[in-house]
Image 1 (cartoon, rainbow, N blue to C red):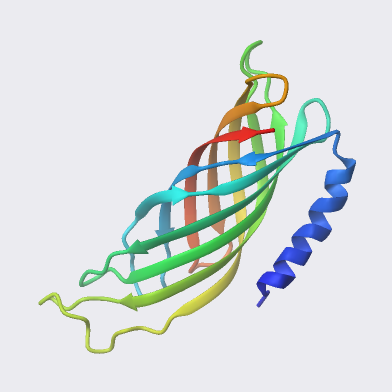
Image 2 (spheres, helix red, strand yellow):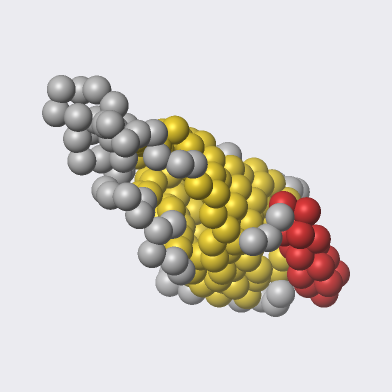
Length: 193
């Protein structure tokens, strides 16, 4: 399993040389509303929605292509029932996507992208309930920590606010490569400088 220090080093080793080759760099924030679906090995979980803060780095690689690097933090709880497993979930996600501009009309040129991400996920306070509403007799289940790789698909559309600032909307789907990870759909607004 990778540690956070190893992850940070890996990200820096990958992003810094690419950033130096980029024609321009823009950095900003990407707050999102996210839909979370946890695949727990012990059973189904409740689907949740929540707020997801993120930092974004856009690296223009030419007229119609760019790289989008993101660091997102997620924290939420799925509720227990007789069938659903409760989970307190914390996730730190680092991703890199290659995006290409699609010239749909003269005024609208969205970006479509594909990429990969790494997530460090922590699942705690895991349990289900009996039909009477009490904790099950074999609960609580053990906590679990997981490192996962994700396939990322995204789409963005942006507008220039002034000479220095751009604003955009962003939709992203993240699918884990393992069968017991965290699947996320994010929709947010970003501002980059």
